[in-house]
Length: 300
Image 1: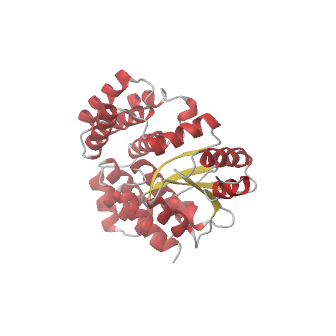
Image 2 (image 1 turned 30 degrees about the vertical axis):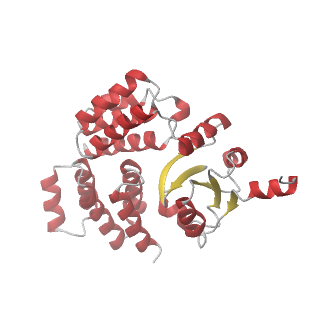
Image 3 (image 1 turned 180 degrees about the vertical axis):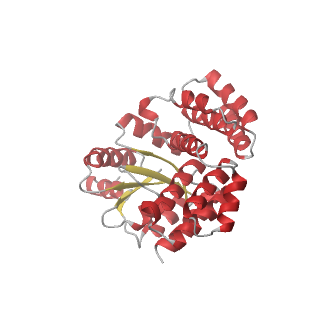
């Protein structure tokens, strides 16, 4: 039987601080064995001081099913910058070496526990889980109408299914029904509006609204072809391409601006890329490629 000191040591093994240099080992490699939560914090952040003890308590109670890694963004800004962390506290869960879920803000203990349970136990029932996966797949494959039908079935059984509400909102964005998307997101409880799927839907809606303000795609392409240094035209072209779901093409345009002039429009191209990443999702191919290419420029 473990003695009290041994028990404390075992619990402490599930919580650690990390650095830029140790991030791959502490997070990427370790997440291949169990989920790893990364708590991005700073000493001056009041809500961080509220959240971190709650996270530590929940992770220690999980007894090895999940680990917590804390990163001080003041001392180690490269990783949070690469991941597009713009406000703290921010928590990102890594699974199998990739970002899988997350939230922002100092959630209460009950919501943190629910987040961990969802992450480690997959609380969604088998049938509902299959339906949710099918809906997500339909949306990813460019069938927002079919995905909307599946999300609606889930919501008929559970009107509070936040993932399904966020998915339905994205379906509305995909069909250009932005008012309905806005109304659907308004149905998400205030306490859950920072969940990753909701944040992604909100970012997708904001991007669709931005795209309505730029010119026709063909005209923007002509402008950029005529003057490759017209960064505003290239920026607008990226928005228009993303609205057509041409993510890699949109990525190319913004990367081109960052390469030529990182400071253009108050770092506007990089900030827009971060919003793209939020909307596309952490595991999307364009997001993974975009973060890799952005990092190679910013940290070269």
